[in-house]
Amino acid sequence: MEWTKEQRYRQIKDASDEELLELKTRVSRCPWRQTFHIQPDTGLLNDPNGFSYYNGEYHLFYQWFPLGPVHGLKYWYHTKSKNLVHWENVGIGIEPKHYYDSHGAYSGSAIEHEGKLYLLYTGNARDENWIRHPYQCIAIMDETGKIEKLEEPVIHEVPKGYTEHFRDPKIWKEGDTFYAVIGAQREDETGCVVLYSSSDLLDWKCKGELQTALKTFGYMWECPDYFELQNKGVLIFSPQGLEPEKDCYQNIYQSGYIIGDKLDVNQLSMSHSFFQELDRGFDFYAPQTTVDSNGRRILVGWMGLPEIDYPTDKNGWAHCLTLPRELSVHNGKLIQKPVEELQTLRKQQHEVKDTVCGEKKMYDGFAGTAYEMVCEFENENAAAFGIEFRADNHEKTIIKYDAIEKKVILDRASSGEAVGESYGTIRKCAIDAQKIKFHMFVDTSSVEIFVNDGEEVFTSRIFPSRESKEIRFFAADGSASFQAVKWNYE
Image (cartoon, rainbow, N blue to C red; front, top):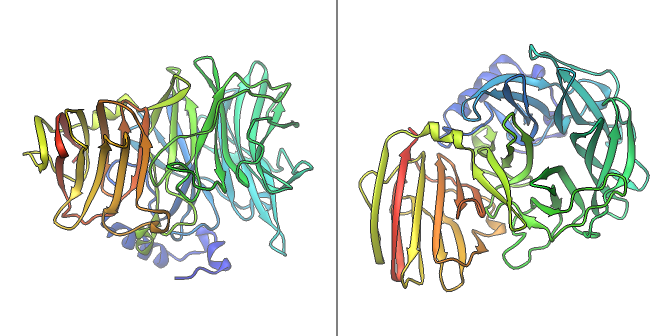
């Protein structure tokens, strides 16, 4: 169905009880509802927001349009957890009802200050000519979970030299000063990041544009996130408008990072290496990080992309969030590993050790629709080896290593209902190794594959039938030995 502007910008309170019940019923009947990922009860989920550890719990908000699988009037929806595994839906965190967020509470971040959690976000407003005006706004959550918005924005204007595409503040504190990076578009329609500072979270001053070596790199940088890890400065952002380049930048929009020396907040400079993609799969965007009480830097991303139709749309909902990942730095690269708390989801365990030679093999206990599996291959002389999963006679998703190309390849050409095919059905990245480890988290309609202990990650939605449960290990044109352990999650 085509959504009108009026339909997209309705408040949830404008929907009748009957409409909401019908929508919930339609969502509940969807065959692709996830079992261990954060997903919306109805409607569309996108960017993770306000990810924080506060008052003994992890708090995570996400962009939410409740009335259908489209980008409409955005709320912040609040969910929380004590362990990063089991999440409790709290409800609407920020409702767009002031003049400064009349057309949506857009993305932002959170920081604890004086015993409360301050949420800094972009208010999206439109005038009668549908011209956008972004405001940077604050809502404050107390220890009881009550959230109240300030009556006025804390940043009213876009600085000179930039367009109305000015959003997604990410906040941190250094010494006695708060800083925020904001994603921006210059008037020449190139992307960048602007830095602000404040002593009290209320009075913000524009320090200027962050100087990087990426002068013309896409037309907009969304969801910036600056942090320091292992004595390095890291800037994550999601540039829009990059052209595909060999195996890189194959999705409609990308997410990645630059890493180097710590940001000089006075000189607005950061010496850094080249831009690297965070995820090599089909469906990953707008990630956000936080630091927990143990000092871990943890990342969560949106498992989806803008401007792409998904098979769940017809069921009244779209998208989910990735599993939380712990970050570290190794050889100038961000390493991502699933947080160890996820091991509490493990149920029945199955193990196998074998060699495959020009064949596909299946084993007892190795099948399912929701599970974790670790498989370590050692190549002997095969041209390629890997795993077919969520498979039956007609469907399969393939993760493999091409020993000739020296590349890991994810293929979802036969994964089930198609999604985003105009952007291709294969994703690749180069890894030169004799041993390849695939750490896989398979859910009803997604897979997250951590390669060689998080050196690379492939995150993707897949939409197979419920009957597609087989797991097949294979080697082509030669042999490879492997050992695998699988834990059921159901």
